[in-house]
Image 1 (spheres, helix red, strand yellow):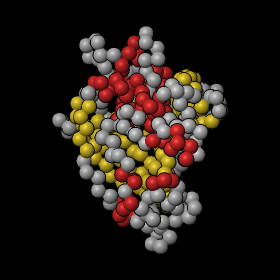
Image 2 (cartoon, helix red, strand yellow; image 1 turned 120 degrees about the vertical axis):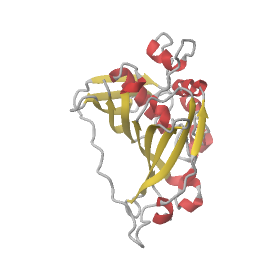
Image 3 (cartoon, helix red, strand yellow; image 1 turned 135 degrees about the horizontal axis):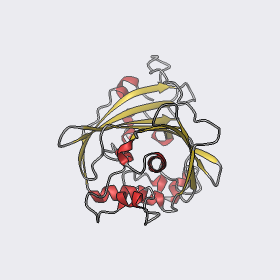
Image 4 (cartoon, helix red, strand yellow; image 1 turned 90 degrees about the vertical axis):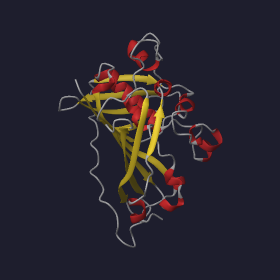
Length: 294
């Protein structure tokens, strides 16, 4: 059972993460870049033979300074066997270097009891700094849906207020549509970037969790969304992506085709989107929104 005060004041040690240009290229390859080896907009992230390259994809901020499976600690009170990734949001404050060292500082910002039998949400932030200069590079907000922890506030009433529901994208004709076919081995590639959960690599583990086979990491799907938005709205330039939010609504099976339906927002640079697994007709990312600079 979650104890609100214990979890809200959870202490994370600062994490210093050193990474190389090879790590940046590995991350890009794990998102499927290079599927057109003649496309210079893709090659700038996966080829280091030209001066100034590779560049780092902005969504790599989600794997830098990864805190590990901290919710598995029994002291959190979280039923780790029943957690799923709910939402992810990044805000980019500066261009990520393709190699260097970063310092990650984490803190729990919200714990919401949705009621007995309805689960709870746990939201924590990561501030990512350049370890050498102290410059803030990115802020990452991660929300986990703890399906087995509803009702934790029944005894003392301690819970945070639920945030407003994120707006859904429009349902009319999209302004842009792009489709990207994921690789059958994509989860095996992406796990090399951070998350080694066997749900994404071991058939027996996936089947025990109710899936026919290992599923793709939600953050891989999220990274593919970032890649798609850069292509469609940012001219492939990583510095254009300023914010990216998405809600995870269904897992992706490696090898499926992802259809990104994107809509121009009311303000300059705003884009709303959803992502559909074409073969099943299932929405896998919903309530997507991004801001890209011109």
